[in-house]
Length: 439
Ligand code: URA
Image (cartoon, rainbow, N blue to C red; front, top):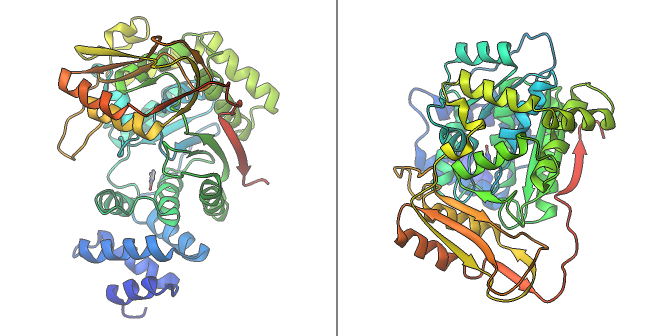
């Protein structure tokens, strides 16, 4: 093995020269070594990647080295194991709905999720708004629950892709998140280490996502599919619209309430249709039938209340108060609220989801600094969405926060977040494109 010099790696990447497979392996080993590569050198290398990029081979090497930086899970279960990951969006509560649907249809869904990042929300924070719900499952408890009820949603354990954990925290504070090869390695190292046979990747694209345009989202999808294929996994990437928030609620308790509404049988809402389509795709990948059969199966899981039963079981197993599924009002909202009205008549032509996400953080639904705590009851309920017609003075959205000053700040941020036009805008599908390892 050649001697390793971090300074040389930084210089090579900065100059656009490729690192060898061995250099990448040693770099990743150095992230979690007893005497680790110092943060300032890692941060310099991350910034060099942001400017110069990595080749496909380097991206694949980085992904596999990060996958192998900790434990890799191997599921010995009597049925297919599926996983799903979103690249991060505003109002994205898909996992809360999709995991119970998929589990109720006979597919195992052990799901490791993350917390909110920047203006985007995280599944773990949403679930923690359910009184008593624990997301910190010990590996044994996680496994036991998956065996018993086929689904569990927990925080990523410390030993799963630990190199990503370290790099991710550094990227978050060094403005090096939005690099396509780094996002690919971060997501796929965790997904491959989690050991599912079938992986559905939801690549968000638009103003509220890290990928702002279709070309970047397609490039990320291409790289992630290549990593899945190289590791022998079945993978589908859907490119989905984040030029509007997903569903009508943004904020933790609000989003759990909305997920409960869908699981109570609201299969026709835009959110319900979206989650059912994604669940059906996972069922198809897991060999449960033709696309049409899987769609019918997923729809029936919602309409029959079977998926809701799995959600309630999951809450109960993880120590939470499952009666919230019958009484969603137990998911308390913050004390102060304010409804913003439409300033003009017309059709909603655009919704700046990043601004809406940032406003929800100002309300307390996300963190501005690492030490902030989250106000689970804070957030935004939309009363109108992209393409809806509004009259002057119609309610547009209601904000929830612990204080009037937070409402003032968020209201100021939202001044130009919604654009009203005189004409009906064109229809825009939520699912823009689908790619798969089988293509
Ligand atoms: N989600 C991740 O897990 N990693 C990234 O880099 C971006 C989104």
